[in-house]
Length: 128
Image (cartoon, rainbow, N blue to C red; front, side, top):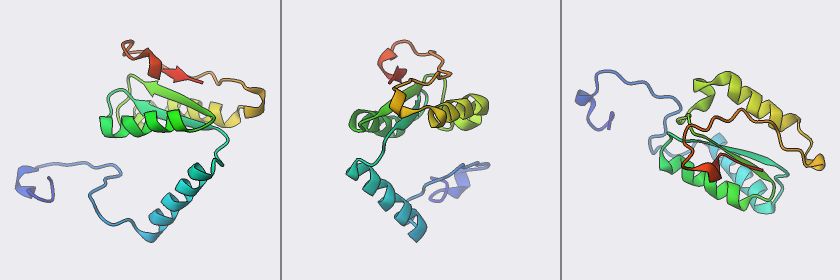
């Protein structure tokens, strides 16, 4: 809307905006490699994080990946929007580091700093 009707916008901040441009060669290569790894089943363990206040457009892929990947921990942060790493950077850093440092071989579930602000969706809070 900002580019189609700039007269309606007086101030605008965009973080990592997507606006329908063709992907650059580096982005296309990244996406192709990501798809190859997922399709080949070469992802040993994944952490999929979604925000309770994010758009359904971003929540749906998180649910899909959580259902399709073999070894996944799905975390739905009821308090989060689209950028939880900006909203609560310390918690997200701890979440990521906890997942990266756990050993998938021992079957341990990381201790995740999850806040249940939307208990009506308990199935999405933590699913080891």
